[in-house]
Image: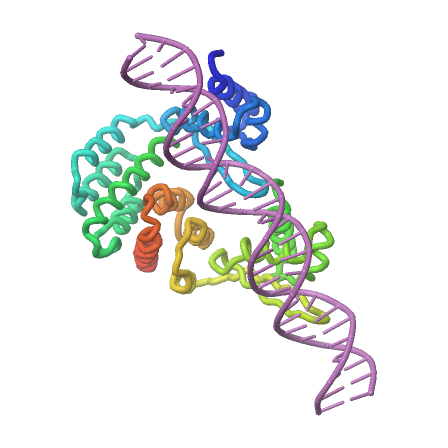
Length: 155
Length: 155
DNA sequence: TAGTCAAAAGTCAAAGATGGTCAGAGGGTG
DNA sequence: CACCCTCTGACCATCTTTGACTTTTGACTA
């Protein structure tokens, strides 16, 4: 194998497969020692090989008893819908309440959000909830909608 | 289990559950001995795991016959839960990710949010979604949580 | 009754244990 | 040669553990 990142990637995927479970927990330090590399190499591998788009979810905790947990997830069938909605976000510098509503309703129609979830999210993203700093409202909405879509992109 | 704090947390919750009662009384020293740690470790566990927003109340007495009493707060009215959580929002100028998570989980435990809704909201309110403007993060979180609770109070 | 003492529990800050980030150096490939 | 991926290390953030010092309380004593 060409480089250590590929080796570590294969190793982690192997462990994940053998464990039968949908998730594994590792200690960054341990893996780094095993492959004789610096700890941040592990972050590099994770950031480049275990992304959401590739079907992985990573959580971690610092401090004593810390860990990195890698979870295998199944991607949602409607990636195309999400992609097109993200294009829309990209095309609109201003994310008005109206636009947010349209996007949420679209997600509902595609079966990706329940009616209650739409109501809930719309309420949180409303002008009223977000407050007066009109500039930032559009920014926050964009970021939160992106976070939403990232979450919806897998089961 | 990863670290002693988690172990002690589990132990106390187990005792609480088995006792049937809504409160248990422990001796700090005894618990510390049982888990071979310093007594102040118990305070750490209590301060980080048995917080008000998680639905626990802790009282204690020093001196001879001293004790620590941990009580699971059971509120029967949704309005009471929401009111107490709003008090908590009010008491915390900084709304960390951790606090937000605790509050959302509490709402789940009280039957006011589904698990999926918790995940959804948690992602929208995470540091990652809100971006680096640490100043405003706390403000946005407060406003959106208040909006959420207002919506939930209509039911 | 007031004072003293020992037995709890509380506080807090430092040390320890992890993981995260980022920018720059290093290397391989078209 | 240019560019993109990889690797490294210094510095940062967060959570846990520890211990010295403080406060509170009740019992015993003068």
